[in-house]
Image 1 (cartoon, rainbow, N blue to C red):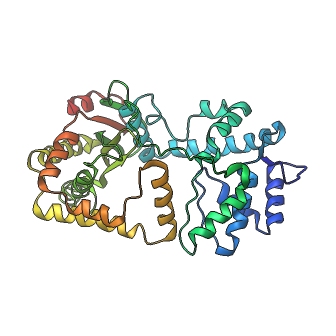
Image 2 (cartoon, one colour):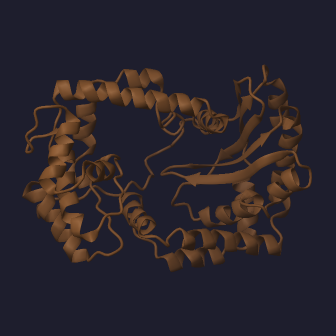
Image 3 (cartoon, rainbow, N blue to C red):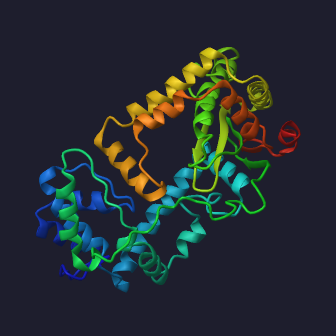
Length: 383
């Protein structure tokens, strides 16, 4: 994209250089900051206002000239297609995509984030411009900063950079995306087996089900349960599958939350001949935690692991900045860290047993990537 206010006679990279030279920055710095929809970068405090000015020029006054987009499209599509190919070459990535597709079907959550070769090759100038006009608007913008900053100074810098047209007294930000708009997966989450046959040395399996939305009060109990069941080397799954039997090198459980729904699952990478046995052990451990919950030691360990990961994740300014921005985008308020830690500490055995029964007790979906021609055995094991 070109800026209307910075003259340039060549393609985007020259315009980027022109903006960088005009602001006294390096092209690499400007590009790194602005290269993602969620632009994130650690920068010296003295360059903050110049970076904001660069954001204004390149993100809010684009000129979708056909020639520039043609050049960028050829380059960018090539890069994305290479990334898709690289992702397809990694069976541990492929199995997670297959699991999401089986669980969520033909919905945004079920489709690959990178897209497909067909969808990427079909992108046109009109679609890019339309997406920009719909999404890249001042009411959708969140500026989050952490570190060596003063709130008033950042606000003043944003107002100066974006100008009166973008920041007006009458302007109202878009509300956070809280969910509650209806079913995330029409007809309910999927179940059954999705097999991706590959001539590889290892079987990759993901067994799981629909989880919780990011505002569900049960998310703390599920987080503690997940940590104890498959969240580390002391977890049940790691001990039973790897330490006691040596059936897999990698085994873990995971959970993620979205606006309307979420997912929970177990990943295992093992020898193809051991896949049935590993799957049976995982199902057995899931059944045990549904019927009997956790021990006192497991509950305490799960709480400690979850609390520790949250505290350690906030040690650097970049993580704090991301937390602030995410709270503005998808939560009704910024939850204090102390409140989150207290919610984890308050999880009881009854909470865990209830979460296990309501979530882990659901019908399961299974994704398999490996040297298999038939999914009949997996379907029988899942039933």
